[in-house]
Picture 1 (cartoon, rainbow, N blue to C red):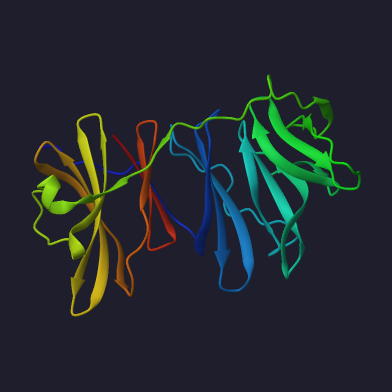
Picture 2: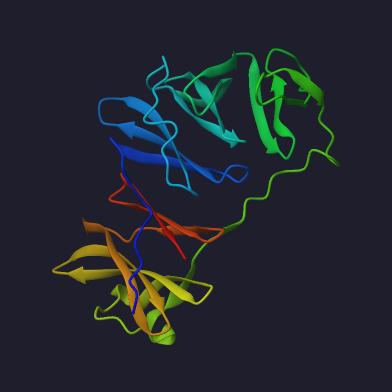
Length: 250
């Protein structure tokens, strides 16, 4: 029996706050927030496991976040104020950490197959248009028929009862609840165990009836955590201890 090994194990310097995947370049982007009120951005290519952006920090060290990713370019938004969730402006950053353009009048609407769909926040009524990802320049008026939304091939686990799945595991799932997904010949399972009132969260990959990969996601937690992994194409992606990215090819 061959045990699986992760191709990416990336420890970050804070809590992974948001994760986005660019399906054009098969690159994963992370927004990381640290206890000293600093936000940084990291990107890693899934094919080769190479880090591109490595804990990149904007001049605005806290009031910024991932807006979208497109063709290996990261779009970052600011916030209107510390007490407001409303976004303001866009900055595009390339994989070489170069700021390609910034426009603080832009508001982001959604991502299309032809690029980001934006609007000028200073003009009313709102008029949507597609902006060039590399320049921020006006390309054309938004047309719903051609500027369709990007569909990223993601699969998410479903809730299932462990007793129904008949899992060959050496642990007893807490409340008999698991998150479960099948892909190729593999079964992926995430579950909680309880000892003396404290919870642990685990992930397992099974090939037929044998465990070929396992990891401890969180320990000494007080309540059950939500779904703990996603599947993008043939990559199993999950976050360990809120601060470590792991990727396992299946």
